[in-house]
Length: 413
Image 1: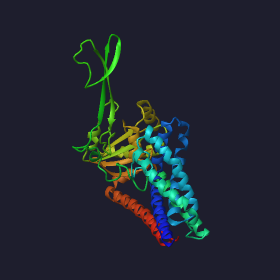
Image 2: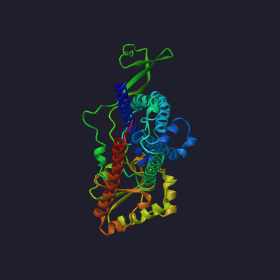
Image 3: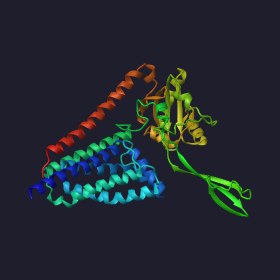
Image 4: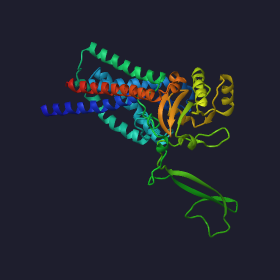
């Protein structure tokens, strides 16, 4: 009996930490980038014909991140443990069959369960959920034997602080930019390098069917059995469909087009001087004061030989209307909307490039003025920006580490 008790104790400890770590990590990376999670919700709403729910996407994204984070904290620190086990069990009972449906139908290529920090296919997500369900089922069955590690008042304080922490990083990311950038367009990333396809990378595999007609009857053939020796069959058409997707580089839809339909991507990425990109995924809901502030910087750049481009997915008519109404002094070029949303989580947002490498990013409220360049403080500003982000990263990771250590030290049967 003693051996059995020790075995159950160790099993519950392992289960709590496995499930708790997954939930904490999932909630944290969603909370860091709430707009990214909101975009994923919108993709699912569109795929399932639930467009009327799109206005709720951001609220649902923050709520999901908070719920997952608190469940993870509950399991790791044994805070409201039985409630956390119930919540995790309900989560897995709901999402496991849902991810099976998504795996079969594949309406969206990846689930977004770990944001951009760890991209999983729908099938990978389903099998991950199966494993988690096994762990949480064991915890659920033995939940009555698990005791609390803290008195109720301390549990309330820990839950409250955890909630404030997650909400703080979420709203900071909304007002500024995410504290941690897991996307391929983070500061320091080289866009040209991200577009490279390795020599031995797997290529897309297609299957082609050939349609021939004879005596008014059409029939499909493959490239191996089509009636090439029978001249009475007349070729009509052919269809090709993707059988297996090949390697996709981290950056694959970065194609900038001017209003004449000409691609200028290489011109921008190969520029050895500094280049500013003012990014607005759509101009319909953009921040006009931020655009006007960017126009002042654009004017200074024009007078001093620094390139300044506007990038948007909006059409030419919408561009012309905005340029005239807001009195903008820079041109807009076309880029895929999904790519624009991936580059920066702000509308508009500003990106600084040098030879295709991202060395600065600013949200709408933080777009710098001409003095940023005029006072020759470029290197200092970038250094300050990077240091600030690094402090936030280390603070967040330190907090998570302290939570884990606390959970281990406070472990009780």
